[in-house]
Picture 1 (cartoon, rainbow, N blue to C red):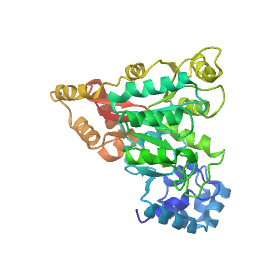
Picture 2: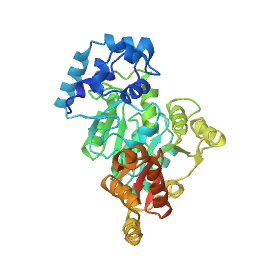
Picture 3: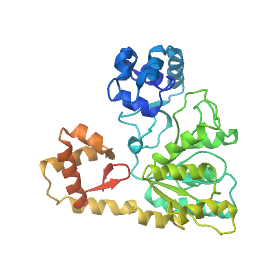
Picture 4: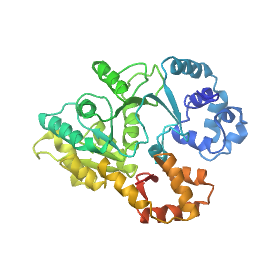
Length: 366
């Protein structure tokens, strides 16, 4: 835990200060400095104003943050603050990216391939078969599977990932001191024991209230390269998540169903309205995303050894090799190069098939 964790947690507890406003404040101040800044200075920041500045200056509930720090230490929770090394890079390109996440697990949240699998809580046998077959198809690609630990398709996706030795992370709409639904407590333990994990932006003690689920769904959408809707009606959480994914410029895919089946009506609607690409298995998804099986990678890397690179290209490539992937903003910061120099180097490396562009202005080595 970092010394300023108290202020990072407290920042998420200030009334009228959500993720968007927190991001604005963090462009000007360090977390501790936000609470020390003068009210008049806070009011001048575009997007903050007098009401939010007053909320910051009147905040006096640091006890909540202190209690959360004790909870984190006791249960070995990993706090992930926006902009820090282990924070999920794909979320950085979301305008409302969470300020602070709480993580219990071992899965790499910056894995090179991440897919969210979502769907109805009341699935049919067709939905079950498609989910299990889809996850099985992705097994050779070492994909990280994301879902919401809910009844139905979510639980099926997590269980299928475990059976296929794929890491899987459940995104929660409550604190890490509980599991909802209660029936999935053993499943949650399996996730954390098998190189997966549980992730939330909510403090311990936060109940799974209805309004928390759309908030949770934006993480499901933003954390992944692609969101796959297996089976859903025309309303509900899966449709909200698909809309959010489209808003984040993420790929959305859907399995079609019978036109008479209400459980597939949402998938058919997404496809009809060009908000999702029709797929029938995991292999099609991999082909559309240009993902290759793991065993093909070494040969490709060996071929690239003979590529001649400029000093700037070598610097960018070195940074990407140190980390599995990196957001363009972080490349600009860490490289010491101008943004135009980084952009030129990235484009050249892409054209030479040395690196690959991922959703959300994130880049990784081939």
